[in-house]
Image 1 (cartoon, helix red, strand yellow):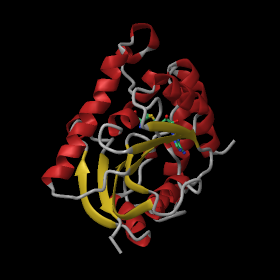
Image 2 (tube, rainbow, N blue to C red):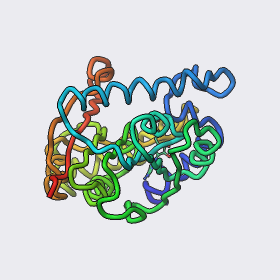
Image 3 (spheres, rainbow, N blue to C red):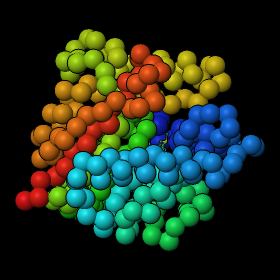
Length: 250
Ligand SMILES: C[S@@+](CC[C@H](N)C(=O)[O-])C[C@H]1O[C@@H](n2cnc3c(N)ncnc32)[C@H](O)[C@@H]1O
């Protein structure tokens, strides 16, 4: 089974077993003690912060269609629906999407399964805003890179994409260190998690220069790169960065 298919089947299982805990891995989000309002409030807070930053930076993002890539149970999709006319949440896992449909809190959001390693299900220039949080890190390369490239195809001119990718070392493609890193992240780490009875998620990294190249090659305009406010302090090994990039308005 490919690393990409393993992630798909892992999230099919998580979506059926512990969908909230699979999104935010804290004991309080396990089904038996879950406070759903608390869980969804984390999405509202996160989105409010990002929308405030958009406002403070005087970025005029049209409020039409938005996409939440890797939406899980819709924590952020529902929050986005307070700011945009129509929001689509897309996810590889049909069990996650089943939960998202059951838990939907706003009429202007909808959910869709996409098992393809790209976003060809969406039209060119379809979205004014694309958001993706704690998702790309679970997708191996080259698929992760192909989704980022597609963001800039489906983003409308004048639109904005904000997405989170953990930073990693600059490794020459196919070099020994690059192959070792891939093997470690796709095989060793998930195996280690499994034998300790933990969820078997892969966590991948893409170096900042590589993400910047992908954005540029895809016609995006990089506006800023920012550390995650919480994780920047907490961990030396996990350094997620938010990329803010627009599609020039023609
Ligand atoms: C940690 S959860 C985050 C969910 C959501 N972004 C949030 O913050 O509430 C990661 C999600 O990414 C989804 N995912 C993983 N690979 C994906 C892919 N190739 N395409 C779309 N979704 C994917 C998983 O099914 C899972 O729902």
